[in-house]
Length: 277
Image 1 (cartoon, rainbow, N blue to C red):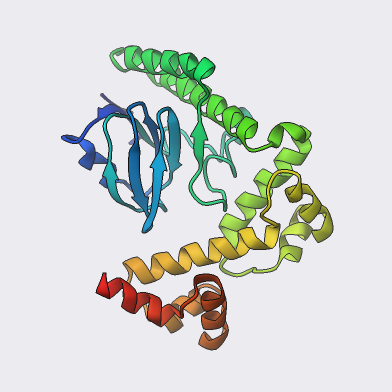
Image 2: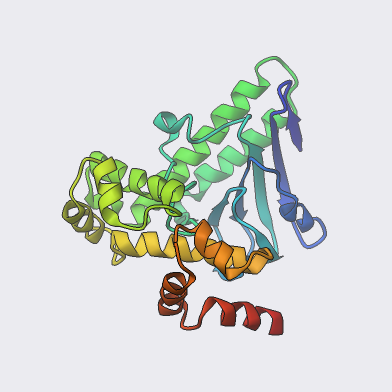
């Protein structure tokens, strides 16, 4: 089922199986994707990293993620472009920025608990019904249902990641930090930069993150740098020197030391290992 708007907006809703799963690989420049595993185990490789999802786990992807392979039994697939609905522009309505999308914490995976799955089922049924409508309010209704799904999943993620222990203002700081890192990791590698943007001290940020995770802010920054470095090595022909410069390192030696400390091998050795595989 596909909705196409007058201003190049689109929304796709589909039940995926082994016969039609190739649609997942055909992503556009501003596409956003939700995959709900409603079968048994689902195996997906994103940016050369393998993820195994259990039943009723949901994963969120943006145009920056590259899906290398997907093995599934049954998956519900929602994809839309940002002209249809942009979570950043509507963050005050859905609160998903830095949690489900455009965060620095890798690939968000949300586990829907058994006694709440009925709500997601209802959203899917409503979506399916509205996709068959053709009146002037169809787009508004589809956007409304999508917002409800994003709000529901953001709430579920907060419940599972100890966010319930925080006040809303504290959660918003973490979300904004993740979003800032996503936008500035290639130039700013220190916590102090992000703390100043948030009008907080680095110590305050560290204490806040310690309440919900064992990953301090500096680890989130470094992990995001490494994710981009691996992507560039995996999917481009850029030289290691060019990748280092792109990530804000003025000399290749500093970048190589950083990469080896995180990966265990140098960037050049990592590239050679990929060729062997």
